[in-house]
Image 1 (tube, one colour):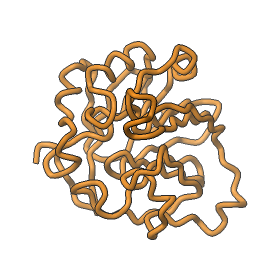
Image 2 (cartoon, one colour):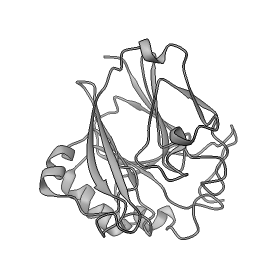
Image 3 (cartoon, helix red, strand yellow):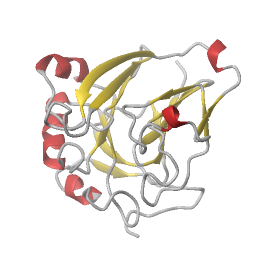
Length: 223
């Protein structure tokens, strides 16, 4: 198995790389995610949890993510399954639907939770138990509140939790919470110097706080 690399590109956007295959999750359109630098990425596959401007860059074009020339010919190393959920606790009537994606390469199981805003059914939870990595929104307001996210994490028991969709400094929507509201609930926080986590890790449970670098400039969450 080749090494797997996850890179935080800002907001809820991540790049997942294995061997020569690259997936980008939830790219945001220019100006749609406050403070974050415009995205100019390449990928073999783009996956969006929903079509809001700050997650659905694939649907709107605008050069945010360009597919590689031979993307259609390349074999994806991941088996990808979808779990349909909601962006709110009102069956999608407030903010619409949300798609959770679970990727499995036979060694690692990774889930991008999108803008999860609702409780999950027991059947859905069964599909998400004991993940190797869970990418989860922690800012609340538009998504599940931080305290509810922590309860879900404790129930599902992923090995690595990577927070996303939170506010720090000038980055992120003013209405959503800063990372500290979630982090104070956790006893396993590891702060990384950069935006990338490589698997395999040592297997110890952790909440991995990746550092947003923007357009090559180191950005501290304390700014």
